[in-house]
Amino acid sequence: MKVEQISVFLENRAGRLAEVTKTLAENQINIRALSLADTSDFGILRLIVTDNEKAKEVLKAKGFTVGRTNVVAAEVGDRPGGLHTILEMLNAGGVNVEYMYAFVTQSGRNAILIFRFDRTDQAIEVLQKNSVRILSGDELYTL
Image (cartoon, rainbow, N blue to C red; front, side, top):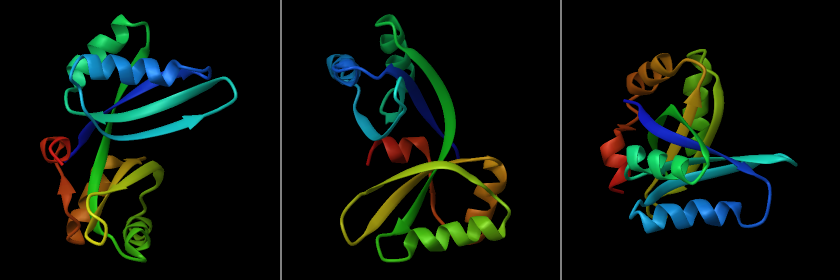
């Protein structure tokens, strides 16, 4: 199962991130997960939101450059070594992680890992073969 993520390209200047969050809030779009990576000139804000189509539409209307990417959301126990176990599975399956970010649903229970892979379908197969729960977009949006 793949989850759609939107990517917003931001100039690296004060207030630009707040413009994104304001636009989403004004349009009743909830952010479920995010990651922000930057360079000296620009940043890439990666978002999992409750309404991708609407988010893309309203952000583009405000002048933001917005893209879409398929990612995978995997659930892992919130314990030491949880991430390592997943990475070992992927490595053994010959899958490369291009980037990832994570969040914890409830401390001591489960973490959700959001992955971008070089070979997404193969990664899903490896994870499912190893009984790793893969979340659908609908499940992720309602956490």
